[in-house]
Every structure is written in structure tokens, then in C-alpha cells.
Length: 143
Image (cartoon, rainbow, N blue to C red; front, side):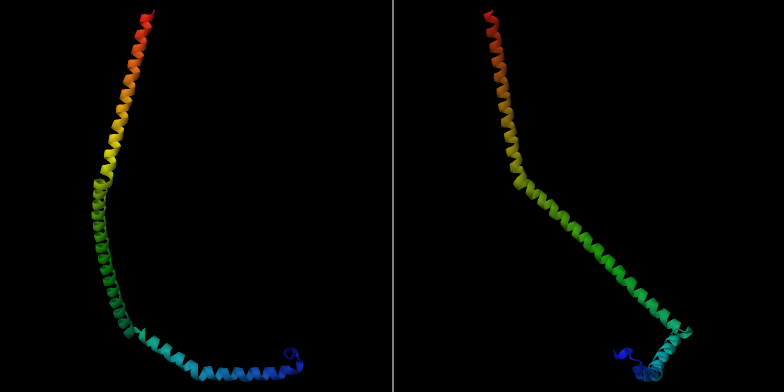
């Protein structure tokens, strides 16, 4: 394997040094000045003069956020109130329609059936009483 060959170490180390120095010079000459300029600009903005600008911007942003939140809260409250009102009216209308159309007829049929059952029950009870009293009378006469 050429990576582990002792005779190849010198060429690998030399290429490592060449690439490392090239990268170091590139970073030192091009990238570090850009980073230092950005840091200086940031430091200048956050200094005493820049802090007033930032605080004014912060206040403006917070005012905008509070206005948006208040507006959305009012809108959502109004929307929920409207939905509640419309759903209550729909529910009342639906209940009235159900009572008038479906439940009224069913209630009449139910009461009529209960009346018929009660009437049949009374007739059967009267017949049983009459039969018992007739059998009791016929039993008394046979003695």
C-alpha cells in the first residue's frame, strides 16, 4: 500500500506542507480581512451611537407586533362570536324542524300505541275480574 510505504512519506509530507501553506495564505489574505471588517461594522453598530438606532428599531418592531396581535385577537374573537351565534340559530332551527316533522308524528304514534296497550290491558283485567267473580259465584252456589 503506498500510504504506508516509508519511501512515500517525504512526498506526502511535502504535499501536505504545500497545501497547508497555500490554504493558510488564502485565509490570511482574503477571508480574515472580510471577517474583521464585518466584526468592526458590528461593533460600531452596537456602540453607544448604534444602540439608540437598535433600540428604536426594537421599539418599532415591538409596536408592530403588538398591533398585529391585538388585531388578530379582535378578529378571532369576532369570528368565534359570529360562529357561535350562527351555530346556535342553526341548532334552534334544526331542533324545531325535527320536532315538527319527525318527532311530533312519532310522539303521536307512541301515545296512540300506549293508549291502545293500556286499553287492552284494562279490558283484559276487567275480563279476568269478571271471570274470577263468576267462578266465585258459581263455586258458592255449588256448595
